[in-house]
Length: 172
Image 1 (cartoon, rainbow, N blue to C red):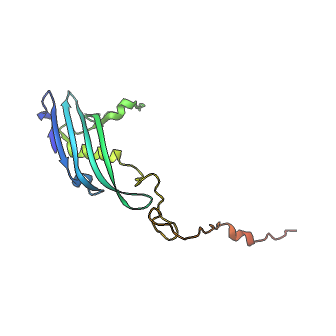
Image 2: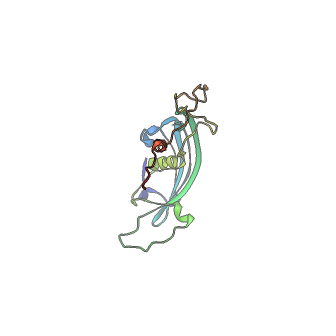
Image 3: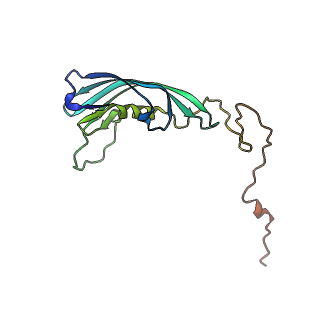
């Protein structure tokens, strides 16, 4: 859903939108529709976007490789600004408030893109089905959460072990 900036009245617009997995570009599966409540207010050169998002996705555990349900319920509040002109600006240090600013083309606000960005920002970098996940056995590959394997931990050999047999010749 794209909203034209010049169509936003002074009091702002409020929407409730639901999306499927298409906004996530098939990166992950959506178990329930992604619910977005959004309020958009226009000022002179900025657009303020506030709202909340709820989603339930199917993620893949990075330890045991099993799929698990992950829920998201988050609020967002940021400003959309026109990008700076082509003039060169000196480098400045950003404050925490500057992190709540994004740039847009000045003509449209894409609600689907905002929803997808909010989900991607909240998704865990290393998804885990649970904190105590034991993962897979490095030798036989069984899921250690379901069964215990009988593999013996082999002593890892050092790549320098071959040097142990080399003797230095006397240089006398």
